[in-house]
Structures are given as C-alpha cells and as structure tokens.
Length: 237
Image: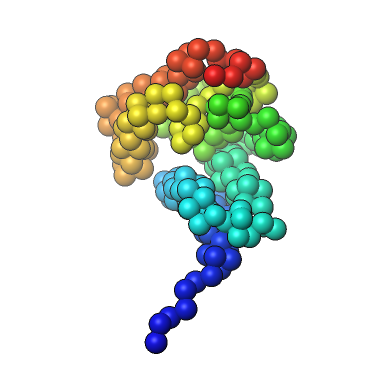
C-alpha cells in the first residue's frame, strides 16, 4: 500500500520546529556558559549558527510562508537569534573574567538592552541585503575576546564601540545574502571556520596561524563595505 505523502502544512511545521530547536540549543549553550565551560558554550552556539544558516533556505524550499501563513518564521527566527547571538554570549562575557563582575554585569545589561532595540528596528537590513549597523554578532565578538584576552580597558572600549555601532548608518556584510564578492567571502569564512575549530579543539590555546587568520578575517569583514562603493547604509547598491 502506498504511504500517504506528508502534507505541505506538516512539512511547514517541521521546518518551524527545526528553527525553534535553536532555542533549545541556546539553552544548552547558556548552561555551559554559567558553568564557565566556554568551549562547550561555543560548540553549542556553533550548532545554533548552523541551524540559523540553513533554516531560511529550507523554509523557502518547502514554501513555509505560503503553507503556514499564521506562524511568522521571521519573528521566530528573531526570538531564537536574540537568545543565541545576544543573551548567551553576554552571559559568557559576565562569567569569563574579563573584568570584575560589578563592571561586567552592567556592561552586559547595556548590550542586551541596546540589542533588543536593534532587533526591533525594521531597517535592520538595507535594500541590497547588507546589515545596517553592527549586526549584534556578540557571539563572534565574545569568542574573539576569549581568544585574545585584551586588557580590561580595551575590552570595555571594544564592547562600547560595538554597541554604539549597532545604531550607526554604516553597513556590515550578510555573508548569505550579499552578492558582492560572495565567493571570496565564502572562502574567507571557510578559513575562519577552520581557525575557530582549532581554538575550540585546543581549549582556546590555538596555533599562531589560526589566530593570525582570525585577525585577517576580522579585517576583511570590517573593510568589505568599501567594495560596495559606500559604507553608508543610506546609499543602496
């Protein structure tokens, strides 16, 4: 007997459950951050990053918006992203010993508050799919802080500059959506992934070549808006 095909609505629900599973992964990362197991924290955050990277493609493939219009996939994605990109990394920041807790906790609270406002901004992306302002990649920023361990004053300055940059009219690349130099960005991110794996494999005691690659990739991402023709979000390309 022929088995009945899975209905489009059931498939749409499965896709949303896949997206929502990122929240469960975020919870596991949060538990590791509180336990000061930062390797475990960022392994789980990497899993969440993979889910976030492919769920949109899967949703478009199965026409989720059309088959389940009353569940907002974009809103679901933002809820999960706020946990994994903002809350978990800032909990790790507080527990990582970058500075005294009485300074780290208020700074993290400022970041979480500012990030909530950023997530609510409907102008988050430009018409040509660049992020407007620093795109709350606190998971990446805290990872870099754990790798390089700058002085407390430098750490505070980096975090404050990044928080302010969320609201500046400058652009940052969306590696999955921006067409300009997409092939090169993909290759650079592949190198970055190898360097991240090396750091996690060694418990944040990675080789010199991996750390050099991390710095080069950071410079590439920061300078890439120059290839757009304008770093200003108001000028679409």
